[in-house]
Amino acid sequence: MIRRGNVTGPVLGALWMIVLSVTVAVAMSFATGQAFRPSIALSIVWGAIAGGALVTVGRGRSVRLGILAALVIGGALGFGPVLVGPETSLASRLFGSAMLAVSFASSLPSILEEVKPGILNRHEFEGAVIRFLTGFGYIFFTAIVMIPFYVMVMTSLKNQSELIQNPLDFSIDLSKGAELFRSYDELFTQFNFGTYLFNSFFISVLTVFITLAFAIPGAYAVARLRFTGRAAFSRSILLIYMVPMIVLALPIYIAFSMTGLRNSFWGIVMIYPVTTIPVALYMLQGYFRGLPSEVEEAGLMDGLSRLAVIWKITLPLSLPALASVSLYVFMIAWNEFLLAFMLLDDPSKFTLTRGIASLNSSEIPRQHLMAGSVVATVPIMALFLGLEKFMTKGLTAGSVKG
Image (cartoon, rainbow, N blue to C red; front, side, top):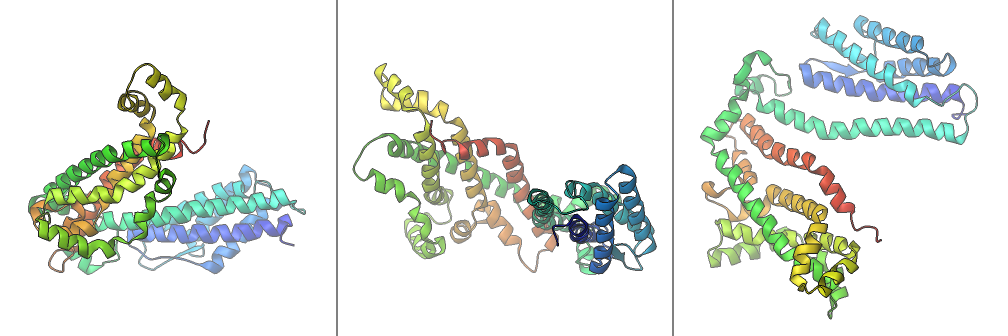
């Protein structure tokens, strides 16, 4: 029975070793450019033995140190869960073995914390499985996010000869110093990326202000006022997203060309809020409904107009929601590509995404495209991480009444 501890321990140990050996092999291959390959068979053997030992002997310090030492020695001698090529240096081999050993010996005892040699009850068995799946989820989703970003950054730090020699080598030579950032320097001096950055920032900020200028009164009206069609309007706010933007591309292009708005900042600033106002309305109306109406009624009784109530009472109470909506709208405008690609032809008016698309050419070295992608990604990532608490608070505020 798998719910026996002396079966659950080895099975989860083998599975966990497979997860970590694959992770370490991929990480070391990317970091060093050398050949690291996980061995599924050896991973199962090592993991099952370690899992069985932790369940039957115990999870004491001596057992964990024994597992750690055995994995380091086994990896150094060439029969560990991660195999290496003949050209792999001894230092890289030892470091990879140590990283695998430390991560495995420190994490598996936590996964098998409640597992004992006898028959496990449902709580103990499911707890061990859930802890394994949680650890696997952390590693899997971290890899999905980090690997493309790592490849992008490392490629941007290489020169053309290095990429031609080995496109799959994502290690870097730190002895080059400032030469590593040559692609970024050329990006701003030769490809006008400073202008693209300013254009994207300018357009994104204007989009935020225009969106809020329409979304705040609209959301307040839906949440507080009584008018014919209010319920239908509230339910249909997001219907615009049922029509793919690619379907509207041709009519927008024709209309903007005929009115002279194509290839202009103001044309972009006019069309971006069309894509952001509905979602801002939807987010803000939920928050406004959660605010106590008694506070606003007290303001009206004190002689304030409805607009004064919104300005002096509602908006100060809605700062978390406004911050989250502003950040969300800014991210949409910053990352928008289709409309910018379709409406902008003048390089002096390119947004960042349009500028990056212009680098996707056989005549431009690949490292410049990756450097441009880093420049576009890092600011918005830093902004999101810095304001994440406001966005989370704003998105959840108003979800519960009272």
